[in-house]
Length: 509
Image (cartoon, rainbow, N blue to C red):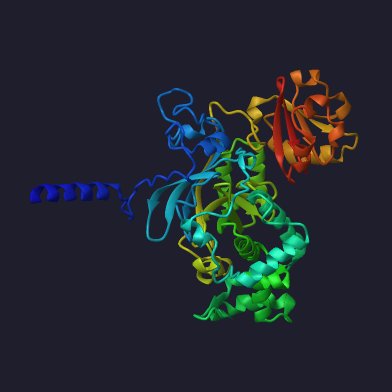
């Protein structure tokens, strides 16, 4: 019997050890975990939610195309959509769980003591916004969510603030007890934007401030010169005022002030948690490359994505926003935009790498402060959290256009740029698009009155939702997109609609 137990223990230890990944200067591939806890009806390793809104595979079939490879395979999951692939070496704060979510997949190819080499896949054509649910019985989340609700050093709400906050919100018609979790967050996010003064400096003060055991903030002497440059435009402001208006959530609430993204995420987390909505921060980094890496864009077929990469390549930026737990799922919110994607026109393309509960979990000074202050910071000596090794995009073999960025010039002969009589938009669109749309055989400007149902038998159309009122759109287009959806398009949004043999690309400018 004793021998039996010994053999059993040995077997268990063997199984456990075989499941571990040894992190060294070797080349293991660290497979990503299944993201989020939604059901997986077909057992292919992909949550039903993501199959419907991210991958566009069949959530009820383990092998959507019946080719013998399950949908959860690293390559197979991309066959029904348009994707962007980036090969990077990354440093700074990162976590494999945070790097696999509704918008991106990540696997680690190699990990060393200084950096991790990874492959990040972005899904620009996701329709996550459509899948955001509402829960009217929210509030009982269980102990595992306590860490996303409690106060922290930065997001430091307390019971008195909670009482004052709810009273203020009810006074303007926002009653948390009567709203779904989604509607509450959406209304409160708009209230945050409208009720606070936005005080923005070139860089967040958090990058240069440390705190003692009592939570008292002070300037790190190593970066005092940079901090003084940071506040030189407003020499009258004191350190305490900075902390109370830009750093600490409760104080920001009472001062009705906040800063840029680093500050605003703390403020929002403080507010949402006080209201009982689980909230966390999200850290992202923009894919940025210098001129010596321009050749990497040769592997990008999508003209809009290539133009976005080229237009934003000279500006480096990290960005923070929040995730809120709505109807059983973590949902991104950037200021007051729910469910936005990794790719944003005018801003760039970002990858997500870490999700702390509070900024106190980050080494703000030695990571972020040092990075923005020194061009030779980090293992890559480039002042960035990453080193770009390669990038490419891919149209899956079963790809169908969904939400704009996946439009492939190889699929269509040309576009007519539609105008309501004023060619200002049409000419602007030509100037910004034609350069990268060389694969199109034809691009011309026509008046909207000429866009008939028959026109879509042989033509594609580019429409500006800012230039043309909804009621002036041809009926065949209005049958495909409601007025509410048309009006809700965010600035720089793209939406594609298939009509007959033609394609309508609606662009909000």
